[in-house]
Amino acid sequence: MSKSPMASEKALIKSRAQKYLSRRNYKKALGEFQRITKLDPMDLRSRLRVGDLLQKLGRAGEAVAQYKQLTRHYAKGGFPHPGNLLKQDYPPN
Image (tube, rainbow, N blue to C red; front, side):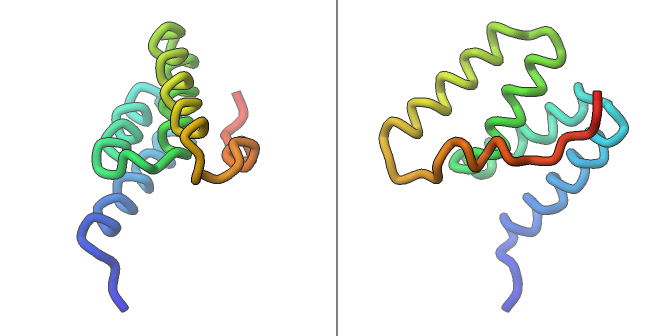
């Protein structure tokens, strides 16, 4: 069974985003994660990463807006427990 074109594109973008994260190029990583959230608005882990990267880049207001948007999704129900999203691997600061 092969991946759908969207899944393949998303995997490529995510790979680039992880590469940028590992190199601490947060601005480029942010752009890639934003592309993922446009392709798949329900990718909550990527939405969380967008918020985290906005925070790292000093864009606190935008980060808060992103986090608020995430909490609205959780409030509607049907999503994984928010604590599960926090169990992620980030490169050290």
